[in-house]
Length: 111
Length: 114
Image 1 (cartoon, rainbow over the protein chains, first blue to last red):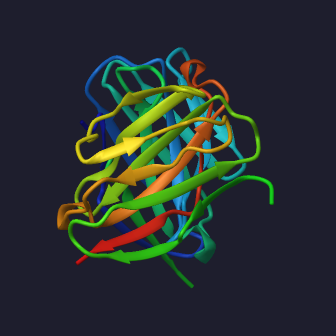
Image 2: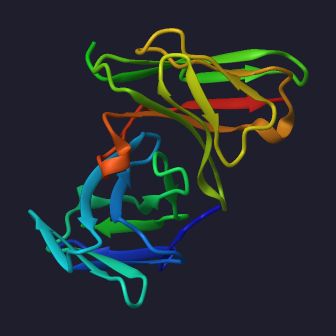
C-alpha cells in the first residue's frame, strides 16, 4: 500500500521559476527518498533525508522533512526544461527492504 | 554493459500465455526488486530478493513467480498472463536497503496482454 502521497499531482511552471512538491506519509519512517522519472525511463534517485535531519541540499535541490507533520517537500530552484519529469517520494516499506512510492508529481517546465 | 538492464523492453502477449521478464545487474548488489507501475497506482512491489535463493512477496505477488539462482539475475515470470497484468515493470537493485541506501532502477519493460 502507498505510504507517501505527493501534492500537487501536476505542476506547470516556466524556466527559471522554482518548483515545490510535497509528500505526506502515514507511519513513522527511518528515512525518505525522492526519485525522478523521465518519460519512458526508469526512476533515478535524487536525494535521501534521514528522520533526524530537517533539511538537505544537493545542487539545485532542497529537501525538508517534518516528522511531526509526517511531510516532506522537494524544492527545485531555477528550474530548467530538462527538469520536466515525474517526481516520487519513497519511504521504507514494512519489510524494511523495499520502498513504498507515492503516485508522483508530474512537473512540466516550459521554456 | 555496466548497470541494470531489463529485457525485453516491450512485449505483447496473449491472455493465458507464460511470459518471463529478465533483469540483470552488474554491481553484485544483494537486493533486487520487481515493481509494477500503473496509472493511478504509482509503483507497487511485486517481489524482492535479499540474496541468491532468497525471495519474498511484496504487495501484489499473485500471478507472478520469481527465482534467483545467481546474484546478478532476477527473472519475473507471469505463469498465465491476464489483461490486468498489462503494465510497466521495473526491476531495481540495492546494496543494503535496510540502511536507507538508494535503489537503482532498470529502464522498464512495457508489457501488454491482449
